[in-house]
Image (cartoon, rainbow, N blue to C red):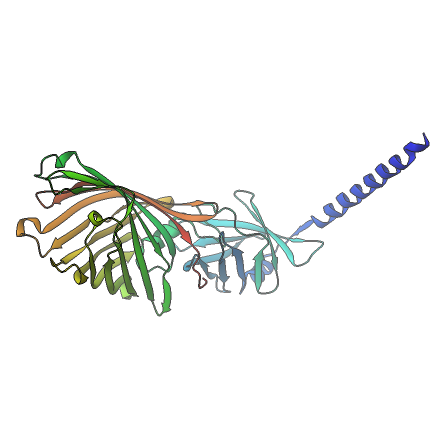
Amino acid sequence: MENLKPGIATIATLVVALSWSATAAAQEEKWEPIVGADTLEEFMSGITAERKLPGGGTSKAEYSADGTGVLHSWGESFPRMWRVEGDAQVCITQETGTGGSWCFELERSTADPTLYRLRAVDTGKVIRFRADAHRAVADEAEKDSPEEGGAAAASASEMAAKLADPNAVIGTMTMNFDYLMHDGSLPGAGSESSFTLGFQPSLPYPLGGGKTFFARPLFPILIDQTVPASDGGFESVSGELGNIGFDTAVGFSLEGGKVLVAGVAGSLPTRTDDRAGADQWLLGPELAFFKVGKKGVVGIFATHLWDVAGDDSFDTSLTSGQIIYTILLKDGWSITGQPPWSYNHEAPSGDALTFSVGIGVGKTAFFGGRPWRLSAQYFNFVERPGAFATEHQFKVTVGPVVSLPWGE
């Protein structure tokens, strides 16, 4: 029995320690509500709320005494308004006519006067943060973002509108999956198809005054590309890199929601199979014009490329581009399309023009707190070269929004 005494004593000590820890923790977790319209207005006036974003960067909302505010998140700015409801709630809304409204109750820790928490009235979700007179910083990085947004988070609809804006300062890593169905007068052309992947990173740099610098390379991976063979049939080019395209431009936000983009575009002879593209360096001007509104975006994008080096056995003079439109719907949904067109100035007149019409659906959604842009589109090439060309194209676009390396 004597041998049991040390064990009993140890257990007793452990029980006492655990009881004390539980009591201390309970004391630490006591909260007192912050109430009174004047008190809440004083707390909100001039405060900056910050929260870390997944993958780096910070979401920051600034609230002014006049009831207005602005949220800076993922490189862009989103208008906010706030008001005190009754005696115990602060309500924050998006810009009038664009959607969400969120109401919170505010509490302060009885053990730590710098520790606060917000409790969402609708969902009961709690966010802990530390605050002084002018700055509130969430304890944890953002792990998930509700699509309806919040006090320090953009909604799916807000992100969808910014992603549709060609001059938005939002970083993306876009992947385009294209399935092409071909047709033409060459024997067997109507049974041929191609499948390609295009990867296009975009990390815009704000120049101030409504101007943005863009540099966007496009890396084409030919998963299964059909090309005409010298014997009159067709060959498949699989698992090869095509010619890398690029554009470098500056976007200008003008009055009335107009956006002008001007720059230089080109193509580099990087193909890893001679059948996958021409051995030429292409370069030329780029120009685009858009009208951006609350209901969507419409515009036209054009480049003209000449061969400036490489294979001189033939000439290249190609005007190409896209007609671009997005109709914004609720909850991050949209009707969207970017049907391509081109005019080959070196081709016979009957084969020079390629023109398509198309439609698609887009969705901006959050996964792990990060916005993603998703879309599926279909294009029908109503005008195309006669011997061999694409007749139908199905495009699926998937791309996460990323934090800009030079900060928000």
